[in-house]
Image (cartoon, rainbow, N blue to C red; front, side):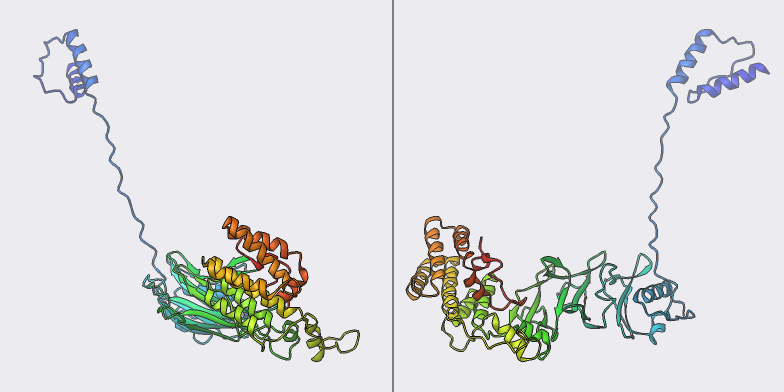
Amino acid sequence: MKMWLYIFLLVSLTGCQSAQAIPTETEIVSTATQVSTSISVASLTPTLTLTPLPTITPTPKSCPTIDNGLAYTSPKDGYYQIHVQAVENFFNAGGDPQKLAQYYDIDIQELNKDNTPEIILQFRSMFKTLMLYSCIKGEYKEQLIREEEGDVGLAERIEILAIDDLNQNDIPELVYKTSTCIWARCGSLFIVEWDGEKFARLIKDERWNEIVDYADMDDPKDVYLRDLDNDGIPELIWEGELPPEGHGDYWDDYPQRLATHVYKWDGHNYSALPVSYSAPEFRFQAIQDGDRATLAGEYGKATDFYELAISSNSLDWWVKERRLYNLSQHGFTTCNGSPCPSPNPDPKERPIISAYARFRIMLIHVLTNNLEEAEKNYQQLVLDFPIDNAGYPITEMATLFWNEYLVSKDIAKSCEVSTNFIGSQRDVLILLSGNTTSQNIHYDRNPNEVCPFQ
């Protein structure tokens, strides 16, 4: 019995060896055979091979199924965030959007091409809200609210201007405006579009030297979409910045003008174009409109404004005392308890502004590499505004520019020597600046505006 057990163990150890004849009980296994067998077993031990487990792709979570029996109860508290969360909970529990019709204006549209339409709600209350819900990864979330901004939540009125593929990239945009007055700001404009991950804001503008993704509206008069350049893509336009006549701010800011702000699609954003204003009433406004057009590369328009400043006899004059006089005339201030006296025009204003306009025409010809016309305008400036003329400081500035440019052919250096000189002529810069409203160019604060190509 023990012999058979020994044989059984030996066969088990040989593993893959070929089967041999089973020895009889009287057969003796030699020591050499044992050693050979043990070596063979060691050399034939099989290698363990691991088979990788299959990759399991999780099934995307589906959006909640509509439960027609679920009722919605509007929160008693009218605070914006409470309504946002209540509606969010309702949708994620399977609530039917149509059940909200007694509380909200509802618009259901596909905005991100995922075959699950977005739900747009506007709450009927004193402080109207705008909420956009989208089901992302199986859960509804509000997409417009920004914790750090009150642009939507504090609005007294919100109006949807368009839900359409305005920029023709096959994804609809939501365009809306908010109306509320905080200090001088009386509203904002927004354009949002799905960017693959979120509803991103597309407007790009500058406010207080910072880039923002919305447009602020000061005293808005009108807002609309219109294709101004006939390229098939409408621009977003708002007009305003002119407070109601008869209000103190109107006369304090006078002669502020109606401003037109345009946002044009540039392939990535709706970017702000240079602001344009209604026709100039005062001579200083004409040169400032010319300077804005020059910076925008609209040299023909700029030249027209400069020529108007030189030749027009209908443009009015401005001195800083006129502001107090206007306020006094309408009962908003006094001068030592009495009506402020009527000011007189400054006889130096027109020659200084006219000389500056001629200098800027010369500068445009330098920018466009038309040196023959540039020299003609420089020589005209020297002839019209000699040393005994009030406009002579502009002639001196132009001479410094021209001489530097003839040597270096460097506009930046030429502007630098010009502004270094004119920076000390504060009385000249004040006349160029006109009134001190936000619409105007303040040359007295930044003389580089006189030659801004440094």
